[in-house]
Amino acid sequence: MISHMLPYLMRSGSTADRARPTCARARGLVAAGLIALAVTSVACGDSGSKETDSGTSDTDDGTLDQIALAYTPSESSVLSGTLAIATDAPTSVVSVVVEPLDGAPTWEVPASGIASAPDGRSHEVMILGLKEARAYTFTATVRHDEGEGQPERSAELMYTTEPLPEAFAPVQFHGSDPARMQPGVTFFDSTSREGFTATGGYLLAVDALGDVVWYYTAPTVQQPADLRRLQNGNLMFLGFDDNGVDPMAVEIDMLGREVARWTRESTGIVGIHGDLFELPDGAFVTMGLELREISGYPNDNTYKVVGEIVTEFALDNTIVREHKLLDILDPYRIASQDFHNAFYAQLFGPMTKDWAHVNGVIYDDSDDSFVVSSRHQDLVFKLDRQTGALVWLIGTPHASSAVDDSWPFLELVGDGALPNHMHAPQVLPEGHLMVFDNNNKGRASRAVEYAIDVDAMTIEQVWEYSDPDYDPAIFSIFIGDADTQANGNVLIDFGATLVDPTSLDTRGAYAHIIEVDRATGDKVFELDVRGAEGDEKQRLVYRADRQPSLYAL
Image (tube, rainbow, N blue to C red):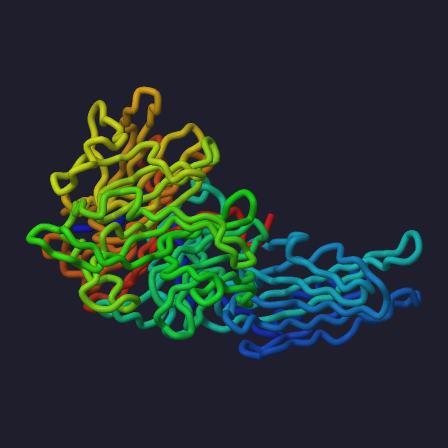
C-alpha cells in the first residue's frame, strides 16, 4: 500500500482547469500599462505558430524609431524559444520580463540568456521556463547606446504555448513544500521501455510545483541516460548514435540545439556509458568497454568478458587517460550471477559476460582520484587518478577470487550495512560518501551515507532513508540516484520501482522521485513518472539533479 496523504502545497487544478486568457483580454491587460510606457508594442501569437512578430514602436524624439519583437519556439520543445529584438539604432538590453497571464509570478531573463550583435541593432533572448498551454507577455526594455540621458523604451509581445506532446512522459506530481526545498528546478531523464526495447525518451525539468518547464527529445534519447549540466551552461547526456547501437555523449544548448557529440568513431571509446563527469580542466571522465577472451574459469571454461575502462577524454576527442579494470581488479571474481547476463550483446555479440557493470565514476578533487561503482562486483572503490592504484574499497572479499583478500577494503564499524548493486556515488564536502543502494539482495532500496576514515581504514553508516510510505519496502531493481543538496536535503530517485517487489516482474516499473528533509525525514517534494494503472511499459529515470535555474548563472 502506498500513501500520499502528505502536508504538501498542492497545485490548484490541472492544466485544463487553469484560466487561459484570450488574445483580446491580454490586449486589454497590456493596454492598461500604455500610459506608463514611453513606447509600447503589443502582438498576440497563436499557439503553434512558428514565429510571432510584434510590429514596430515609434518614438517622438527621433533617437530610436523602431523596436520589433519576434518569438520563435524551439524545434524540440513547445516550452522554450528565442525572442528576437530588432532596433533601428544601436541599443543595449535593459531587461526582458516574462509575465504569465494566469497570475503566476513574473521573472526576468538573466544576462546569460541574452546575446547581442556587435552593431547593437539585434538581440537574441533565450526564453526558458514556460509552461504548456499558457499565455505570456514578453516585455523587452532597451536603451539607446548613443548620447547621454536617453530614455528606456519598451515593447511587448504576447504568446500562448502549445500543449505538451501527446506521448509525453507521464509525470504524476504528488506535492511539495517549496519553502523547505532546495531552490531550483529538477532535471531528469525519462525513457519508456517494453522489456529492453526502447519506445522513446525525454530529458526534462520540473519546477517546485511539479510543472514541466523544459524538455528535449530526439531519436538519440532512447535508454536511461546520465544528464549533466556543464560549466558553460549547456547540457551533456548519454545517448545513442544514429546507428542505434553505439552509445555516445551529446552536448546541447538549452534550446535543444546540438553543439557537439563524442562518438565511438570520433573518440575511439567503445560503449560510452555509466557516467559523464566534467573535470575541473574541462575534460570528462566516463566509462568505456573492452572485450577479452579469458580462460581458466571454473570447469575449465573460457568466456568472452566485457570489462570497463575508466576513460578521460578532452573536448577535441583526444583520450587523455585510461585505467582498465580487468587489469586492476580480478577478472575471475564473480560476485553475482549477473555476470552471465548478455547485457552488451548488441555491442559485442551473444554469450558475452557482464563482469563489472560499472554505473558510476566521479572525480574527488581532495586527493585527485576517481570513485567508481561496480554493480556486478558489489564494490564501490577509489582509484588514484594518475596510477590507477586502488586506494580503498567498500565491499567484502568474495570466495571466487584468489587475490581480493589483499585489497584495501574499508572495515564497517557500528550499525548499518554495506550497499549492494548500488548506483551513483557522490563525494560530500566533508569527505562522506552518499550512495543509492538498490539493495537487490534485500529488495529494499535506500539512500545511504557513509563516513570514511582513511587513516583507520574504516567506514561507518551515518544516515539512510527508504520511503516509509511503501509496504512492502520500495525496491528499485536497477538504476537510481541520491544527491545531497546545499541546504542538507537529499534528492532521491528510485529509478525503476517495481509495482510488486516480491515478484521481480519489471512490467510497469516506474520512477519515484522525492526530496527529503534530512533533519526530520519529511518529504518536501514528491512525484512519480508512471503510466496509468495497467500500463505495462517501464517508465525509467536514471538520475535526478537539482539545478538553481534553467539558465546558466
